[in-house]
Image (cartoon, rainbow, N blue to C red; front, side, top):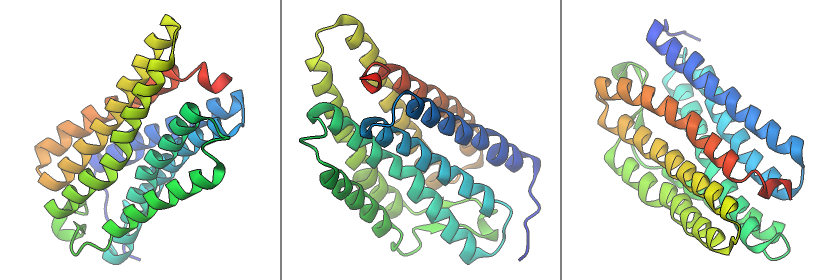
Length: 237
């Protein structure tokens, strides 16, 4: 298999910046499960774990130049990274309704529906091009971008924000309300990162890619921390 000669910038972006994010997500998952392994904690931690799996798959295909293999691995990266939203939504629904109401069967159905919605996008003709002509960087079609934003991102973001607001209204404690505001800001940060990254891949402007990658790195570190801080007491219950 032919290997691509990675340049310094790509090594820094993939193996250092993205690698830092991947291990950071695993660390958060570990901290959550260390507190308790109940289903509520499990769903939140699985969100971080699936996102980190997506990042680490990126490690595999980054140096390769077999177009078919690279494309398949890239789609796997996208699938696992965005599956975070499904586990996150399940976490919120358990928190709002309790596990007795939102049963494991319902949880599994929601995750499957979200996964199928993701898989459907992979059949969009020329949805993503990644080969020598794109310098082995993913370039998205506008149709792919619109599908992901209107279906995949919205399917996770809109319900998450709505449910988060409902949970906020149930709090009587001012400290809990203050922490939950950080949680909501963290959600907005995660989805800003997602939309910005998809837009960067669609515009395919190198200057924008570079600037966004630096901003996104900060965003994807701070946002999960805000989420973790915001739900601290809930995952201890």
